[in-house]
Image 1: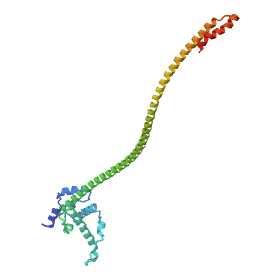
Image 2: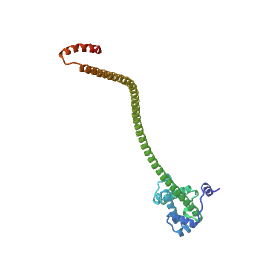
Image 3: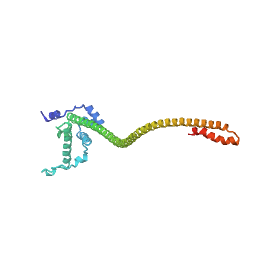
Length: 267
């Protein structure tokens, strides 16, 4: 199994037709000339790949022309200044293509490209870019969802804090009401005891009142009897007085007789 087959084994992607590649590049806003693409012009193809590097890796052409490559100062063969940029470009696009699933990028693809090879290269980059955009879109959706969830959680926490404060207030009010209720119950119990005592006293007073009423009735009867006796006595006196004579001799004898008559009544 050669290196190209191992790349396919590790990461598969569809090989696009040329018109699909053209449409995809245009949808990605990558500037190119279709004739240069069809004729496999190395400079035109390199510009397309540099656009993929800039869009996906954030590395521009100027950064690749003057890189800080570790170990170049130790090379025994002095490199031309342009070679540094070429090496950086080759390493950068190789790393990007390896990530996209193509691991056999070579120097011939830079200087002697073929349409067959560039269909594979561009298909890998287009597929990876689409995947990246979809993933970023999904990440963006997830971030939006996360922001919304965080906002909802913040709102829920604020509502929870408000409800907790309200609960504390209600518990305080309930405690105060419970204390007031207990005081009212205590007062009610004391009133019940007082009412019971008053009822007992009322029963005693009623009993005493009944006795007093009977005694009063008895006294009234006695008083009526006395009035009758007094009335009868007065009638007797009047009757006796009517029998008194006006002569002096008789007047003298009458008191003695009256005394004898009234004495038993008086006793």
